[in-house]
Length: 106
Image (cartoon, rainbow, N blue to C red; front, side, top):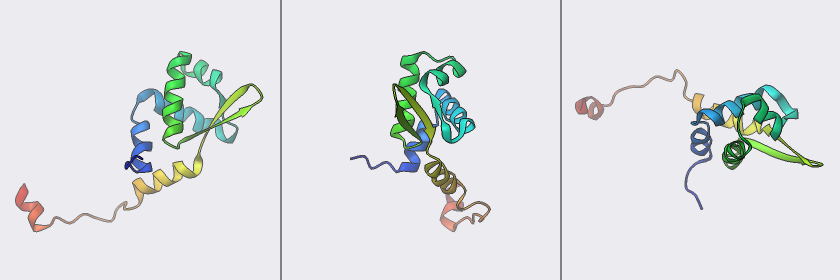
């Protein structure tokens, strides 16, 4: 069992240019999502490369795949996306004070 937090896994998955592009495309696609082939066409990614990156996004909990007939549709897990965004912004503008021990280290 992994001890990495869901937020860390999500951010690590988005840390690759191709996966970030896929995720952003799926955000634009909305709740309907896109077929695997459509994603590949939009981003000019080879099928094996696309499958690898989609798998990383699914494993990170950011993308949900749904089989409809013979097609696989991919869509963003919006609640998970919001959890990651909330994590990143939860302490926005709260201020940071230096502790005496922090200042001595500099």
